[in-house]
Image 1 (spheres, rainbow, N blue to C red):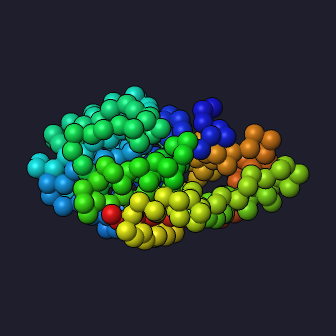
Image 2: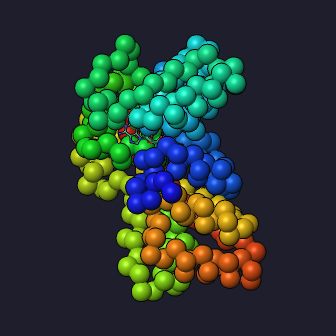
Length: 255
Ligand SMILES: C[S@@+](CC[C@H](N)C(=O)[O-])C[C@H]1O[C@@H](n2cnc3c(N)ncnc32)[C@H](O)[C@@H]1O
């Protein structure tokens, strides 16, 4: 299995979880677009764009006079994004392989009106440093919007794991992807910042789907595999569904 123990870095493990995210009650992309809208004609950069969860809706929002550039370390995800863009008739999306750690020193042709990053910015070795450096790549009133897991996310799975395998050392409960201290370090380059939270319910209707999600997630613990599988089968036999709450934290930095 791919991706265990690593927070979503692997494009393949991430793609396995995409169908799950698609079953979430709220749309992450609608949430992002409502907090950080992009006007027709705007230039948007999506860091760690994956297969285009944000890049594609932003490309629709900015229209033919705007453009979106996606950067991701995974060439497979970039190829998938390009296929999606083509299928949707979008001619304003460019995507290329690249490392977050190189973005701070990179010069782009033009400043961006908006830089977004969904569930990816924390792969930068120096996240606050990168966030600070992004200010110089924005237009005078440009913004950066980053989002990722919020404190207590997937709490229901954490509780089940602790109950099912009490002898196994549990993973650390999930904290906010960015701490207040890191937000403080990043914010010196910006005029103001705002934080947003979304609690998104994801309903699972069978044990297989939930097990497959868990086995591709950083919460996975091999030593608890059999106990969790047993507990989940019992849970579904009794209740027929399992709802996970995905807590999302978003931070908007404004120049
Ligand atoms: C959880 S996925 C999120 C993808 C997409 N933004 C979304 O919301 O669906 C994390 C993405 O970060 C990318 N990634 C991980 N480390 C990276 C790095 N150092 N530089 C650029 N991209 C990276 C992975 O390839 C993956 O596509």
